[in-house]
Structures are given as structure tokens and as C-alpha cells.
Amino acid sequence: MRGSAVAQDAADGALKEIPLQSLSDHSLTPLGQAAMSIHPTDWKHAETANFVYHYFHGFIAAPVSVEAEFYYRVISKDLEKDTTQWERKSHIFIFETNEDWKEFQKKGALDPWTGGIHSQGSLFIQRNPELKFKGSTLGHEITHLVIERFFGSGVPLWLNEGYAEYSASRCYAAFNRARGYGARPISHPVPNDLYIPVALLISMLTYPQDVAQVGAFYNESERLVRFLERADKHGFGVFLDAMSRGNRFETALNKGFAAKFISLDALDREFKTYATQQNGFSNAD
Image (tube, rainbow, N blue to C red; front, side, top):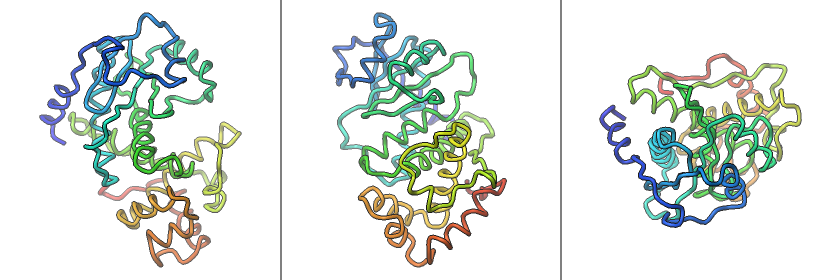
């Protein structure tokens, strides 16, 4: 996307504050209500093509709206999903200070390491106005939103988080390249001593209890998604759809990649080398 297109995004994403009751969708989820209970009289509201925004300051929310629409289009295109017929808008709640975010974490009973969350079609993020580069949290959470919209809630934990990490890194780099920065996606290798065998990774229903292992779980999940999509991009889409429909991993793998991986053990051996190496990129990444 060229700089002029980003400028057009800025125009398209320009926010005009409107009353809560005048929003096209002003219904709030329980977590949304919890967010709005923090400084309840200070929230402002606006909306763009695909999102409703709740925020404290327009100069913080306006850039978020530009990024959000950019990411939404890129992710939907990557997944080959048509969003034009989707009528309901998702809500994005934007916190600014650490104090407010911590209070929201307590109200929502969130994990203390959570930097953003997607829940019931709403996104909750923190944007520190003092940071020039905001990170990939917004792209990560919007990916969860798109996955739930078009694949439902049946996508396994590792696949949901792995694709969100993979997509967010690529989207954030693309967004900054369009603004003239020399950005590339970032993918972190998994230390050998923290590597999780694929059979165990795909069976995990919850995050690791040890906070030190949470990062390894995210990194390895992202690497596995990257590994599979590089093997066959269209096949990965077939695989993702099959997994969302409740297929077993081996069944979905066969549907998406045919005989490319002859067994789970063979996949694990090949993937471990990729997961633990320092550079997992091709020039196309």
C-alpha cells in the first residue's frame, strides 16, 4: 500500500464524535459495560466502516481507526473472506493509562500479562500516547475478531493465537512500510529447552500456567502457522477451515496438505528445526 493510500485511510478513518445512543450499534457486552464503568462520564464515541470506537481523546483514537480498517482489510483478504455483507460493527475500547488498564484487568478478571483482548466481538486495548511505535496488539486482536466472524469459535487455541501473532506481525510491518519505515515482520525462535512437541501443542486447551512459558507458547504457535502457510498458502486455508469445523489435526492436515506430511512425528521433526532456528523468514515475508 502506497503512502497516498495511507493518506486516504486517514481521511476515511477520520473520527467525528457522536453520542453513544446515536451509534449504529450502541449495545455493550458485559465486558464492555465493565470498561465503561471506569471514568464513565469521560468516554467519547465514534464509528467507521467496520468499527465503533469508545475512547477518551480523539488524537489517540483517530490513528487507531486508521490502523483498524487497514488491518481488517489485509487480514480478510489474506483469508480470502468477503466482508462487504457483514452489517454488525465491532466495538473497540481504547484505554490510555496503565492505571486504567490495570483497573480494567481486575474488573474483567484478565490475566496480568494481557495487553489487549478480544471478547464477544469487542476489542479492548491500551494505547500509550507517549510511544511513537504502538506495537502489534491491535492487529493481533483484530485477527481474532476476523477469525471468529468467519470461522466461528471452534478454532483451537494454538491456531487462533498462532495465526493472530503471524498476521499481526505482517500487518504492523506493512502498515509502517506504507508510512515510509523500513519495517519487516518479526518472528521469535523457540529456545530448544522450551520447545513443545507438536502433539502436545495442538492438544493444549489453556495457556501454560508458568508465565515464563507463555511467550514460548505464542512464539511456537506463530512459527507453526508460518511453517504451514509457507508450505502451501491455499492448503493452509483449507486446513484452518477444517480445524474450525472440529476435524482432528491429522484429518485437517491431510485435507490441506495431502501427503506432504506423512505423519505427525515427521511433521514434528521437520518443524522443530524451523521453530528453533533464529531466522524463520523468506525474502517474501
